[in-house]
Image 1 (cartoon, rainbow, N blue to C red):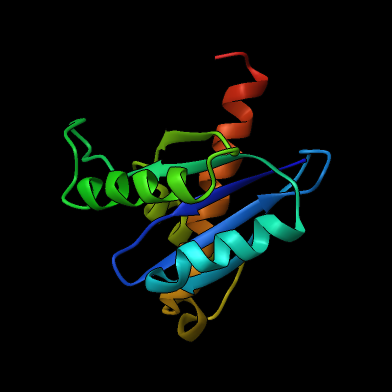
Image 2: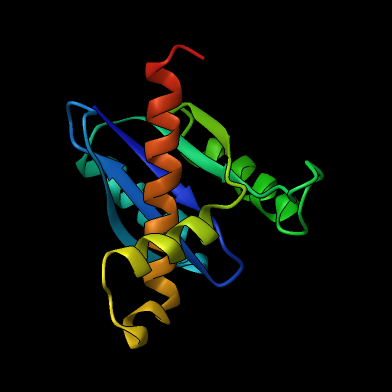
Length: 139
């Protein structure tokens, strides 16, 4: 079964997923946030998803960011729509910064680095990789 992660945004949401053996995390897509619940219902009807990990937006000082209330509200809706799939939050501090650095390090051109959808997808992948590492270390 796969683990799916969400980097929830006001306009668009990055989604990443593991392979069925939960070894590798990879970007799946970016969807319009208004379409997110429909996308998740369709995806989970075709693929077995063990857990959904949602990036919890937090300020560097540990305080909730302005987007956190929206994230929690969406997760409430998602839990009603997909009651059989556990949802876990994962601190997403600095994932956008890491995503931009990853893009720089990989040699992606400037125009492509300005693609906010790509940044969201990479951010979701980083959340998922960090979550998997955290689980592997038994935290």
